[in-house]
Image (tube, rainbow, N blue to C red; front, side, top):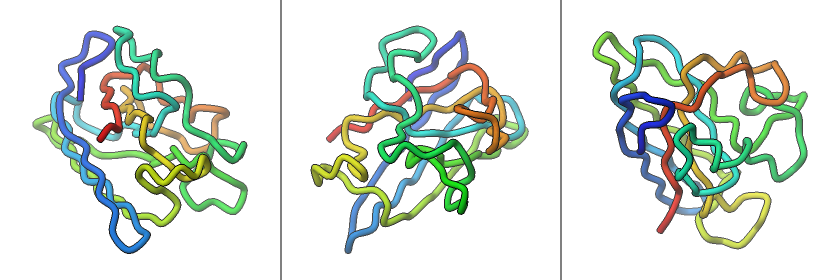
Length: 143
C-alpha cells in the first residue's frame, strides 16, 4: 500500500480465491486511531499523490452506496470501515462470493482495481462515497 495525501500509511492487502470465495486479508499502519473507510476503486492506478487516479468506487452493478449486503443496495467495492488501534495499526479480513480474481466477469472481477483507505469513516449512507474524505492509502489489485 502506498501513502497518499501526505499520509504515512503503509501496509499489505492480499486476496486469495478458493472454492468460489475470495478472501481479503489486510494490515495497514500509519493511520490515526479510530475508524477509516476502506473501498475497492475502479483502477489499479495509485500514481496520483492524492490517490484520485484510482477512479471512483467500483460499482459494476450501478447500485447506490451503502453497507455491504444492504437490501437498498451497495457498491461491490463498499467494504466498509476498519479500526486503527492507538498505534495506528488496523487489520481486516473479508470473505465473499461476490468477487472473483481474474475470472473475466465484469460484475465480480477485482483484478485491475485498487483498494483505497480513507482518512475518515464511511457513514454507509452519503452518496456516492459515504463522506469518507481524503484517500490516505492506495494498493493496486494485481497478480
